[in-house]
Image (tube, helix red, strand yellow):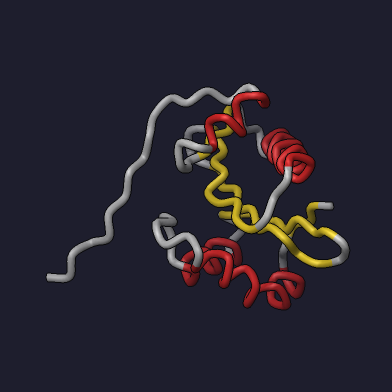
Amino acid sequence: MIIPLTGALLDDAWPWVELQLSRFPSLCYTPEEVRERADKSLITIWALIVAERPETVIMLEKSIDGTGEMLYAGGRMNRAMVDEVIETAHQWAGWNAIHTLTVRGRPGWDRVLKPYGFTREAGQWAVPVKKM
């Protein structure tokens, strides 16, 4: 089951969400920025619940150009979980009048996403900023 984390539910889950985000240092937002954007409803944070425990955190963001981006999906996922994440992302996109879903990630995601109709259009690379 995938549930949106908002309000008190997000407050309760925030330490776990923050831990998941810390495992992805090249995320385009800091955990503080993620929380601020979630509180302003700019990012939707979802949790994939398995056996009454959160296993995976998913962040979806609507872009101004009508695309929706899956910014982060971290934690443990098997194929059935990926099925549920992709289905939820499509539902969320429909609710938000989004015409295209995009995902950024390592090249290994290509083989996972291909069966769902995703095509790799561009890559993204990151480097930590040098302290000056």
